[in-house]
Length: 168
Image 1 (cartoon, rainbow, N blue to C red):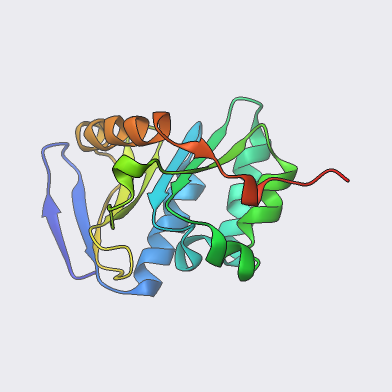
Image 2 (cartoon, rainbow, N blue to C red):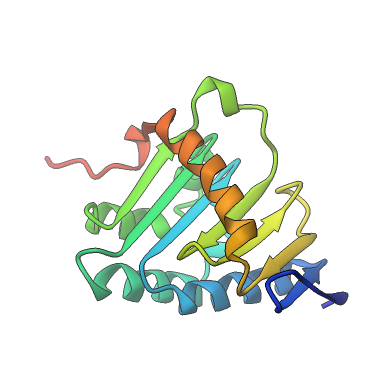
């Protein structure tokens, strides 16, 4: 980590500046999740989610309870489909727990990505293609603001037909 800064929530703000750090922190957040994981970004990020550890943790989380939810809103999933992203078959199997949506036109210009967990923890990259940003493990005030933005994006998004299972 490049530095730590005390926050108003009496915890620490961790800054990261590499793919490895971002992936490790995202996995830590996923492992701590109890109720809901929300993700917004240009695509289902391959660094954060397309690895064995993240796929296993997301699978365990989604199967833990009928009330656990994973909601993902992205601008496009074409690259994810072409690269056979590991999260896609999981989302196709666990349709009641994992939802993938495409952002509406109003949000198509956004370039950040963030992961929100249980209304208390987050990982944020101002520019999705650069793995530089911040994470807080206990920051309900900061997450509340990001969650409101996520809900607005979610409410204006549509389910992604490219990632749904085809029942033939």
